[in-house]
Every structure is written in C-alpha cells, then in structure tokens.
Length: 264
Image (cartoon, rainbow, N blue to C red):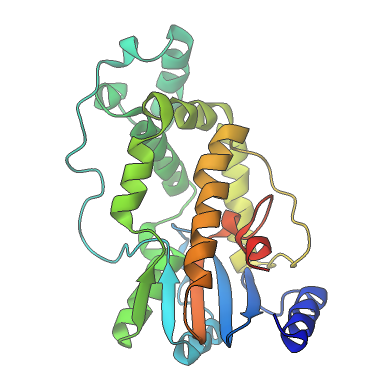
C-alpha cells in the first residue's frame, strides 16, 4: 500500500462517517475504491427510496457487490430434506420455549415439525422482523439490486444463494446452535434490529468502535460472521482497479473481525 493510500485511509478513519447511512469508504492499492454499505435485508417503508447520495455512489461505481443476488423470484427453502419430528431433536424445555414464541408470532409449531432447525430459526427471525414493521421489498440490498438492474450495472455476488444454503445445511446438529441462540437472545435481537433501523433513519454509526448486543454464541459467530468476512476479504482483494459499492449485512461492518478491519 502506497504512502498516499495509507494517508487517505487514516484520514477517512479519523474524520468518521460523512454519510446519513452506515457506510465506510476504503481505498486500496491498485486504484481500488470500496464504498462499504451496512445493509439490512428487511427494511421499513421509511427506508425507501434510498438516499440520493447513495444513488450517486451507484452511478459512479463500476459494479455493485452483494452477498447474494436476491432480486429473483426463486424460493430459497425448496428441496430441503425432511427431518425427524421435533420431539426427537429438541428437549422438552426447548420445545416449550419454541411453542411460546411461535404462539406469540402467530405461527403453528406443527409447521416446524419436519423442518431443519436452522430454517425454524430463520423463519422465527423473519417473522419477528415483520412484526416490527420490516419488509423484504424495503431491504437495502434488495433496493440496491433493483437500482443496479434498472441501470444495467454489473452485479457481483460474494457467495450467492446456493453457497449460503450450503453453509446453513452444514451447520452442526442441523443448525441447533442457531435455533438456541434465536430462542435465548429473542428480545436482544429485537433491540438490535431497532438499532440498525436507527442507523438508516436517525444516526449512522461512526467509524470507531461500535458496541452491539451479542446475539450469537462464539462458535456460531465464527461460522456465520468471521469466516465469511475472511472469504469476502479475499474476493474483494482479488478485484481489479475500479470503484465498487459493496452491500453486506450491517453487522459485518462492525464488531470483532469485521470486514473493513480485515481489508486494511
């Protein structure tokens, strides 16, 4: 990295964010410039349309980079294996806790009986987000993808939907850790969603340390956050010269082992 690039990076870090949304600018050697956007996969109506300055960034970019292109109509949960009944996979206490949350969300536990445990966790999380007023059509990455397609922009996937499904299917014990964390940190996760909504509607976080409530066990955080950040870093470092808007889940930009730190 040249001295000039190092000085620019230091200045960007010291001056804090200049945007009304969660974002970090990074310039690397080889004339590569990244505008890292902290996305929320489901958003509120007030989060649309996207900020004009962000759309200007899109017009100046050579490509939009996302975790996965979710702009299609395909169903991600198709062709999943049928699992044994929940009574064979969860303890009585876990089943009771699941039943309480399912009733609270207006869901029938019987629908979960033969689903993978990670899928149950994701359905619960998505339903919780919907109860808080979030919708997929207002998700940041979805809106960015729609804008990119409207302007014939190049779209680059960091992993793609198939890789994400493979990762979930490979979680130990059918994703038991993810379901346990979802049940344990249910109310904390709701607060975290509200914090991230606030980043878009009220005040974006600074580029310094951001304290966030913990909703993952250490081992699950390593699988779903840190290891993916490492893989994404390698993908971004392999890109040619250019300007890129990179939209990843907001939690990937902050906290331990975050993507911006790994890129520096």
